Image 1 (tube, rainbow, N blue to C red):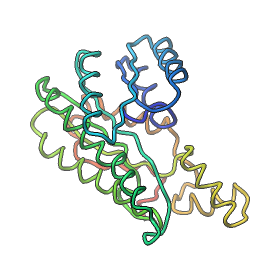
Image 2 (image 1 turned 180 degrees about the vertical axis):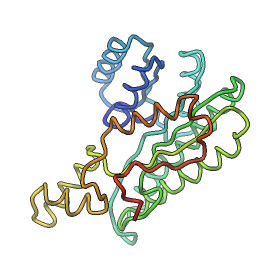
Image 3 (image 1 turned 90 degrees about the vertical axis):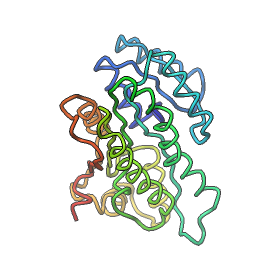
Image 4 (image 1 turned 180 degrees about the horizontal axis):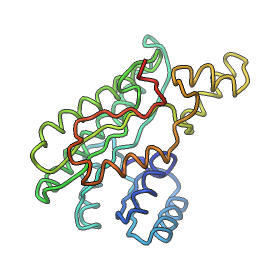
Length: 252
């Protein structure tokens, strides 16, 4: 699974490993710290855990990631596309290179991983592709043009893949979380607090969670539990879905 060395991805990786799933987790960072994570997850779960640091914005690196996973694990049954980056800016000021980077990581990588993984899943007659999209894959917010466009694209890609694979035993779904308290969101909180000279808690309730009726962050463990459910045979008829887990945000 991509983007799995911290926060949402790390929580999903831990949940899968706890269920006995062999995991290749992916991310960029200090090699020593990533190896510590790999070892910790392997020892706590008792399953085979691998680490990969592919640049998933590059199609060739993605192909290598999938090939290495299949070789190390004897196949690839579950693909979780979780990696994502963000930038906030008005459209007219949005740096073109940031737009390209967000499309590369948030959208293009999901296409490249699925494209590389599907042939083996078809041969095995079973597979689960899960794209961790966002509530912003269903609705828009100002100043997040690249992220909203990429996440809408990821939802559309999910539906297309599901239709193409409907008779193969492979499902493809998108999970669309609302706000989760991640480093990415923490950065937005601090930025808003400074910009408006507001206390952190007021920014969280009145700005960040303004559209989230429950007024609480979505828990990583909630997202991980949904991933586990969708990977089971009891979810075999759920495909092509964009499932909100957003505290009521998209119910408005």
